[in-house]
Image (cartoon, rainbow over all chains, first blue to last red; front, side):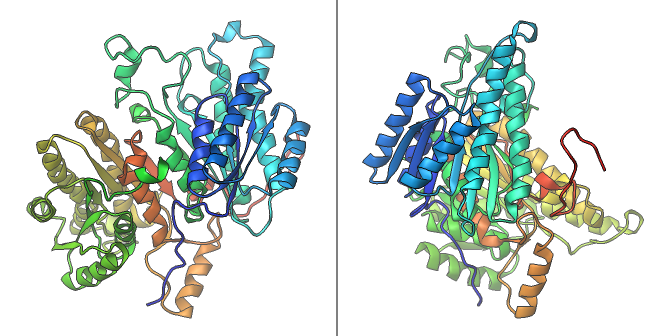
Length: 262
Length: 280
């Protein structure tokens, strides 16, 4: 009997991953998940916000505690040159990453007519422009011939309408389009591009309380609870692995069933 | 920890039924689930095929699977499949509804040529079976206090115009719809319902060089310039059947190399126009 050349689904041994964006706790969980699966993980904050930079440093420490290599940087993803120089330095000090996760997250909840130009621009820049710049630098530095993985963490807010999230929704939807186009442009070169779209997580701003009776939103989520970071990382490990070469161009929801409402 | 959540050897060790588990995608998923530590029951019509698949699954997981010859067009046989599995292993955690017929019955027929029988067979094997097996499994799961997973297998044909196999496509679209509704219904019983939607996937490794060439040639038109291989569904099935996907329900996971994502232009087509959108 002839055999396939099967690859293990949740093994990242010998791989180098890059996680960008630590404004929410998911970044740290993703970095640890990759390290646990065997990857070396470089990390970069998406902004120079002090808390985010510190969170990225903590993520790097988690990775080294798990016995893998790490390298941490503070990026400002709104500046394309900064991203390009940053990734060049990652390449030099850490090696060329073949897995990129873009987890930058800059939410804004405001009515359309009250949103300022500066606020709108900032939301687009951190959530979407930074994704574009990071992907572009990643592909520029990519070691041709290897298999590559781009994973964008987006939110259901970019796919379904919700009041007071116009700027954020536009930016997140932009990332979905970016990923779909990349899936076609890079698919023939051994790279895949996918989105993980999270629902209401236990760190989502403006979610309200955890009491079902008091929080109408919770009654609307089929699982009646908010998601946790640990419920996202296994999917990222799968998408990053060599076994995931046929998963491409998709938006995978981790949302407690909320998008089944449509 | 991430990797622990992807294990299915417990405690308690998870018990999975895979319909259509004797070959192709079903067998490939059963092998991966066995490797993750689950106890497996495979069901299909043909005993001989079940026996040879059982040997492969045992080699992968180190534990003998249960085999139950089943015609999933019969609701009584689907009930019996679940009953036998519970009797043998003492529990049921995952119902993987993979049985289906693709291109055999009435494929290629024009609307006015398709017989009642071919239409009914196609809908029965692909959609009725999912209902029968899900119902039987959910009854057992709920009797035992709830908790479990139903994983369906649909097809990319359900999401796009499929003139060559319209009955099959309609049945598989029904499976996707059932996935969402059942997810909403069963969430209170802690039963998650999800769906894998494969695009073009080769069912087994090519046996001859001619076969391999045919697969390569078909793969040219796919975004990733190749067809999928059955084993590639395995890790996805493990993710969706294990605790690692605890916040995922009602979702359809498309695995098609990027075909649906890019389906508006031929593979490799590169539009060229200057910024500003001036079409030459």
